[in-house]
Amino acid sequence: MITVKINEEDLLDMLMNRLADWTQDETTTELFEKMYNDYVYGGCFDEWEFDIQGVVDNDYVNWCSVFTEDDDEFEDIKKVYDEQGIGDCSCEDCVGNFIEAVNDDETAFLIRY
Image 1 (cartoon, rainbow, N blue to C red):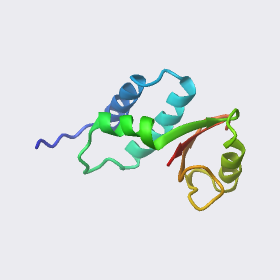
Image 2 (image 1 turned 60 degrees about the vertical axis):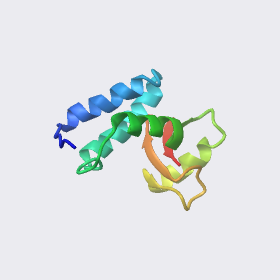
Image 3 (image 1 turned 90 degrees about the vertical axis):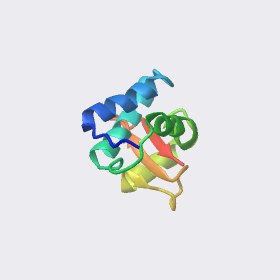
Image 4 (image 1 turned 90 degrees about the horizontal axis):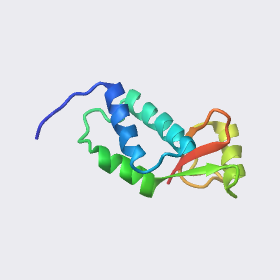
């Protein structure tokens, strides 16, 4: 096993480059970038065996979904967000378990299951 250190900006770029293999949607990209920015600069990946493909592929395919104003669940998510902001929503009347990110105009949310 090899231990590698990488600066945060490069890691974020690597994550976002992998996401680009899945989607070019601007809203989705914005939300994932906000989430990964919080993770990278918050130390989430420190001292961890890290697989960029595994992280992004699993997040995009299995663990996270984007909800917009067109989705039935949006109003429930927005209500929980207005009350408590980003974070755990598993005990609330909200789809999923965690509000990961919201876009700047609060018309889209990234939810983790």
